[in-house]
Length: 96
Image (cartoon, rainbow, N blue to C red):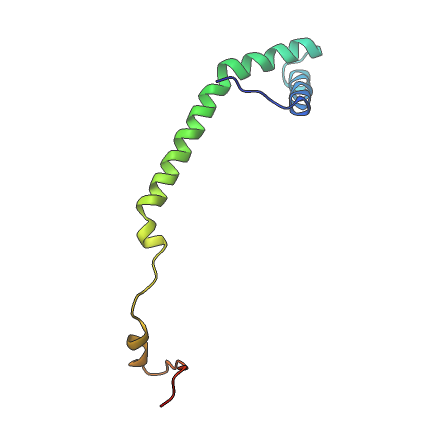
């Protein structure tokens, strides 16, 4: 799977790589070298990060799906249970 970026995003990343090299590697690099480094990262490193992100998302969704009963649960037939408790008053639509 090829990771394609928007032109504006790619431009910002090239600028960021240039700044990183200037501030942390003690030398300036041109736009072409920064673009080549970005392309290398997208082809070699990004798929590993992408796959890990997908794996993490799958694990998260599976955990939530397994706990769905506890997460999304509404007590059934609670009306009469509440009626018997002191201090709990419900208005009824039907009044004899």
